[in-house]
Length: 154
Image (cartoon, rainbow, N blue to C red):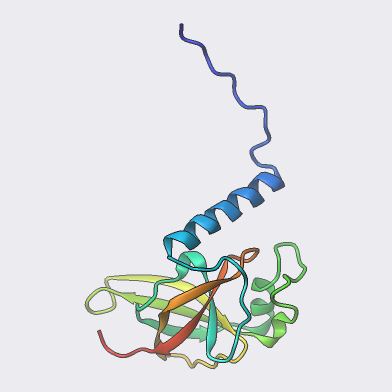
């Protein structure tokens, strides 16, 4: 008895479903990273915010450039506008474009992403790393909070 399964009539592109899927993926990613807490944390001095899928602790990255303030504000707001509870004043944050240096000479593979911080002051060309400790900062924006460390050598 081969019964043909009827296609789901559920709207798979609905906003609620996308939101549910993003939160589920974030929770799974958080567990895979070994994060102890899924609550949000406050950004403190010396801390940085990085997207969960671009968090590679211990891997060197180089600061490519600072983001314009309007771009930083736009990236730290909900899609379509509005702030998240964790960031009431996105204009208090600095944003940077960073590129991970992967491979023996740092040129074999590269991942480019954004880093944000209230009291984070980086300069173009600086080499840094993220610490191995991170916590979920904003599940709405998919951001982790972690510390930035000196770049050092391999």
